[in-house]
Image (cartoon, rainbow, N blue to C red; front, side, top):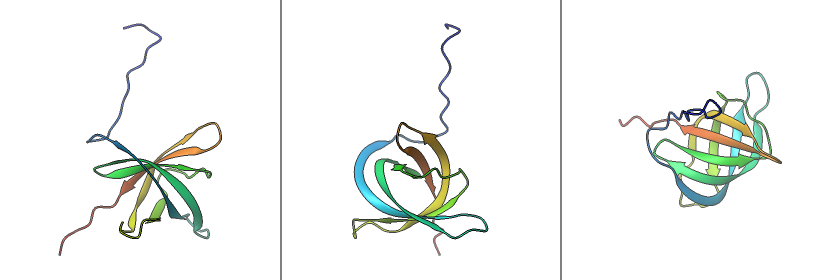
Amino acid sequence: MDSNQSLKFDRRRGGREPISGTAVAVFQRNGREPMLTSVRVADVGPGGLGVYSDLEIKPGTAFSLYPDDPMQPRRIGRVVRCQRLATSYRLGLHFQQSIAA
């Protein structure tokens, strides 16, 4: 292996499918008011979603996601990744798993 190459490390357990859409995200920040923002959906996987945001959100931040499509349920979870792009941020959102009664 060339010394300029690096290994790609990804902890995802499943593949990602590209999708498009928009949603409203509410991010719960410790000791501060919740932050409400619109996000653009990029892709979906078995346990989460990739979105684009105009705001930088720290990994570990809890969220509630309200899709613009009324047929899609509200989802909750935590931000697991935040990558700065040219004019926005790419967020990785991990969904909290529901526990059946």
